[in-house]
Image 1 (tube, helix red, strand yellow):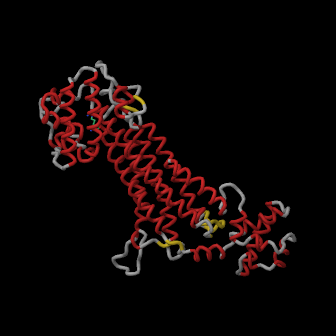
Image 2 (cartoon, protein in one colour; image 1 turned 90 degrees about the vertical axis):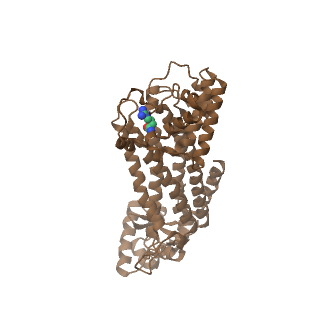
Image 3 (cartoon, helix red, strand yellow; image 1 turned 180 degrees about the horizontal axis):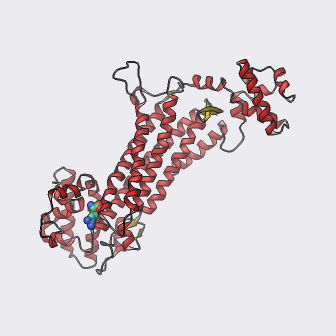
Length: 458
Ligand code: ARG
């Protein structure tokens, strides 16, 4: 008979058993389930529900089950639905009637929330470490390339001269926000749900504070109905995963474009690419394409959770079992994608000559030209029009701004002097940038120094 089978006269349809089983994905919660049960048993002893021997026998039994699972000796069976039922049934099998006392004043509703919160606390820490490694890799690349000129784009058109160091730091800040988001979410997760029971708490005087301390939670949940129906922490987590994937996907898109023959700004190592089964010359950036592709499924995970929860009446509904697959999938995908991104950033080769050529063969210094005029007293709007006309002149002649004669420049504005050529020289442009957060090597150096301290103190 099923552990919940008392009131049932008929057996569960095997099709229904298969339909309702979650064991093939929630078995990963076994460690947390056991840890939570041990704390619960200790508490039950403290309040006099279990004797010391009973508690010890339960703990021994649970320890044995953990070993069985880890040694692949544990028998998983669809009829037992989920990991919670599996462990409890096996405990009863192993230690007899004492095992039947463990579930006192506990429901799978508060138990599953506990397991997931404990599981997430661990997994988020692991992802934080990976994110930190990603930040480190970016910082190292940024400092090496603080003087490497490249075009910065808006609308995918050459816009202003930047450096690769400044460009890659943009991603540093995206991923830093992602990391900080994980820390915030950790706090939301850090609430003990156990002791809420199925929906309304218990008339048995459970010592929830004892369990909280024993399991290292920050606080105890304050409304039993909210507790068993709350999956906000899962949505928060998957949102955080989706943002990481979104950022990784944008980075991938950039690098895929930069690695085309047309751009030729970077080249990925063979170890992160694959070839074509038909075209012998192909080397495809599959690592980056897969990050971009996999991000779509993680965004899907987020929307699965939103739609799963939006129409659910209070409190626990079995629908909620469907929270696990998107959650686990999102964590797993991010964990792998971050590692691959680290490798790509670390191991890609920059083709600096091509980047430099793209910088010099452009009208990007037009902006600095307007600033040159503005600094000499020409109102900005007028300067904009003047330089716009100069660009038109150059285009007609097939030259760039720095190829113009001073005489021709003066025909557009009398304030041009010989020093304009230095002013619009890309290397000087980078040196001259003065604003906080701008693309100058000083700013990159400053940020790298500051952020190294952030990383070290994390
Ligand atoms: N496997 C279930 C889940 O993940 C555990 C909770 C089941 N609770 C229940 N009342 N049937 O949601």
